[in-house]
Image (cartoon, rainbow, N blue to C red):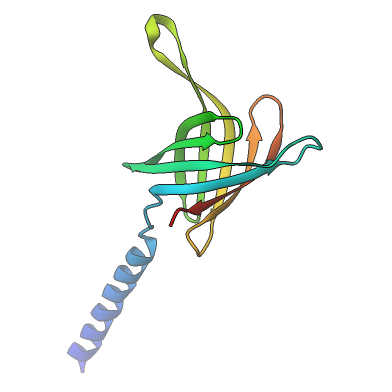
Length: 138
């Protein structure tokens, strides 16, 4: 009887360790997304474009192209649970032609069950803000 309880306890412990570890594994968000969004300002226009996410170790490289302004924003992202937070902006040239990153926007996305993301953004200096959706390209 003692061995039965010992085996049951060991099995329960093993299951308790394995299941949370599997649940903690997160789907890689790398890929191509269709982007759409709009600022909340009275004169803000809706915009569309594309975003590319690429996992690099525990972070994401982010590149988003706004088709309406023909402007590319690049930056970094970090995932925490079902949220992805990014800081994106322009690459400028600093002293000795070294690239200098000027982060302009913070965007925080909530991951959806359909692998899309709905988020809110804010501009670093002006306070302009709005909403944005990323939909995986098929």
